Image 1 (tube, rainbow, N blue to C red):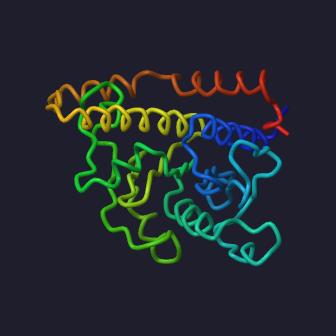
Image 2 (image 1 turned 120 degrees about the vertical axis):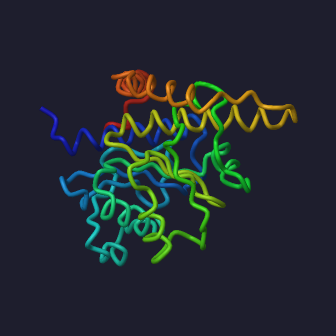
Image 3 (image 1 turned 45 degrees about the vertical axis):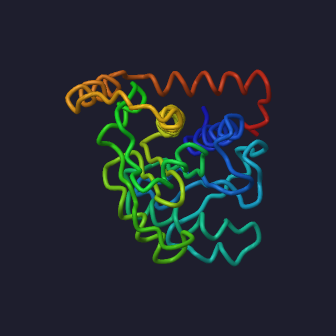
Length: 242
């Protein structure tokens, strides 16, 4: 039987590989993490300098939010990754998996003065009243900036980081990746619709809330989505598991 931590390693490696395939990554930047301990203080994260498309499960770093000495050791994590994700796992223990990207369309939305995502289609309605918008960007995610950002999330699954990018938090890797995929798709549709210069067809709050509830009642969807992604990688390049 596979050890729970090994399963998380494989799942996170799969998420990283698919983020690259879907062009949700950015060079060797951006960070994905998943908690391995009950209190969230031990977590796995992608290593510094490794491209998402080549990461293997065994290469993920196992860190502790209370042990910054890893920054002074060989194979140290990226400083911003350490600061932001350790603060998030420490302050938001319910957020087991945290995916931080600078994906194109979500970041474009984060650059608008009004960064709200209106309910114009089913994917955007999925996130109705489930997004926190950070309007206080104060530089790279180090020190106090990481602490500030980590306290904003609350019980929401999406933190849209103004002037920065996107952060997804979820109880599982599968749910986090499903949310990442669909939020980026929703942002793509919205930005594309804005580009037409024509008036948007925005549904009422009542319909948006109803559709959001329907999404949340669609049990098992994220797991099936992620299982399909793992199956594709298993057929095409199973090295992510090693």
